[in-house]
Image (cartoon, rainbow, N blue to C red; front, top):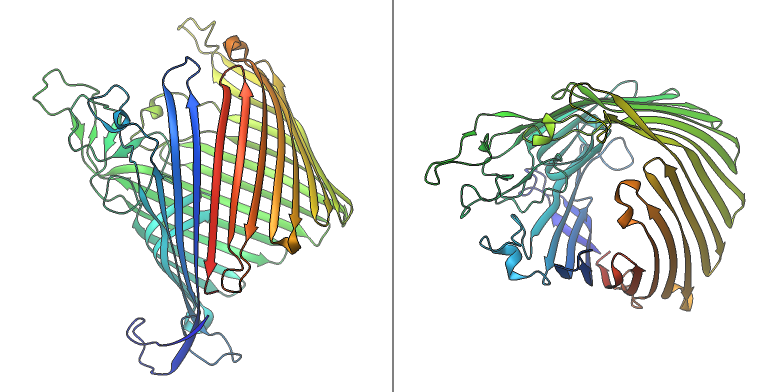
Length: 499
């Protein structure tokens, strides 16, 4: 929808020239109803989850620095999305600090501001851009949420230099945030009303967590693209240094000085040899733990437009927040070597497969370890997967399978998926059949074969205003000897207007 606005008050511009912008509003609502029974019979978790999102995009708010078609033009866009993830199936005992089933930090209807930022590009004749507000950063360091500002400066030779600073959104603070993108290994929130010895692993979050970072990138410098990234996050909230107190009236021992939450650096590079081959690599180093978190190298060749072959080797090791007790334990890496194959004999048929070996390392055998020496032990497993898709215009058939086998057990299974459109694309249907079998020698009582099926249907809006809207309904039924019969109903509603 086209509307007319005057730039000036909102963006601090002096011009009174009329500008135009595009606005769109989108909303989704997902309702899930299911029950999860404990393998021991009790307790049973009843879930009635209602997840709603509301998004707003205001694009091309205005331009400056030149007229369109005569060089770089500054452009301003605004994007925001809210999320409400309510669960009305929770029992009162799960939120009662005096109950045995109490879950610290559990909320019945948490509200999350996923992102809300102003994006500016094309400033200073196209050399400068910035993003201000709550934003999601995606780079070789991983996903990261930031409340702050990010600047990017375009340099000659397709180079880019930038940085960002602000605070990391965290639960427990009045910031409408979740722990979705924070470092692993800790649970944080508001501890008001807690007994000092209650849930000592649930950490107090009452102070802002400063975060900052920088990046340098070479975008398509000939056949090479490369980037270097750095990010550091600080903890400032009080943390306990002893799990319990001997004197109930005394405050537990703790530490409240500024300290490192996470500090990492990453590099990534890709080499393109026309359309014949590519080679890529990525490395992530944890400066806090002084260890490599990820090392990856891969290559892919394209003998023809329909065929591609590749291989990759990656080695990953987990890392945790600086306040996590997991930092006291050893962390065994996992290494994978895989080959890849993708082939499309004709336009409507696509097939792919990967195969190789994966192994993880432990510091000694937990069964034979006698506490007097350290013995490194590898646990290899053969892994493979395959997938194929056949597109028959109104019907799409797809089959995927996975297999893993090693000294720690096996996992095999396959999914058959059928999708069909009716009424010129206004109606759609889905059917999925799944069969999986797994075993674990360390827990023989957990071996099982599981069968599931999904039946779904959807309908899209018929008017011009709600043409992108869709209502869907899914029924899922899973059965195996561990959980018996498990049912799930999912209703979805997607709305998009003013586009």
